[in-house]
Length: 247
Image (tube, rainbow, N blue to C red; front, top):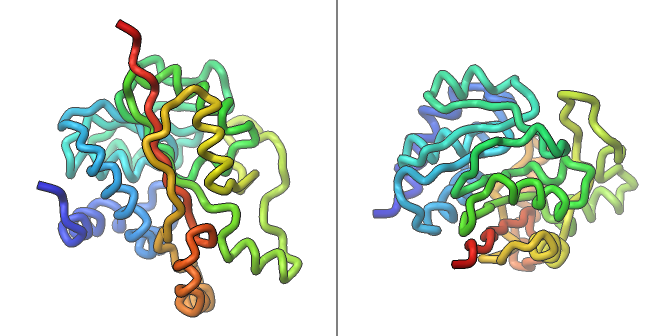
């Protein structure tokens, strides 16, 4: 039976909102809808209990998938700031750097989760996905979310003369960058297919993020009708499969 939103909320408040991981507790209090939507799409993939999973970055989804769906989940990140919280919740941690050709997992997984990560990396996504293909089992799945490059927030920032993206550069060892690039859906689906993966679905969606300040949350409410226009929604959600090995 699928996990309901209310049941997910109870797990989320218990497991996530009381910890810091890589963000503030306030951030996680305002982020439940984002994680619920991603979790719900993952559970609709109907993967079995025990599915080997690695969540690259943060580890929140790894904890939720392990505790709620019984996945055999682990976390990989270039930073260790969330390691203590992840380990305390019984999920393993390893250092993974998707900008490196060598600092990658040595194990292959049936599911790789990449939530709000690809926009921080200054390599073309198809290059990053090529690295990820090395540790996805044949027939395994990549699930990712990322901001939509044409979201209304970006349009308003440009109209106001504000900077939309961080300075485009390489990270120092162990450093996390701001948003290096944001993509629209046709770009992201091209990147997935260019890496040799089979697209399962790709869509623009309202990720539920209401902003970290009171003013931002008020603005979000005023702009909510814009979500009726798909290409102006906040986020992209994509799932793709590594082709199964030939018989």
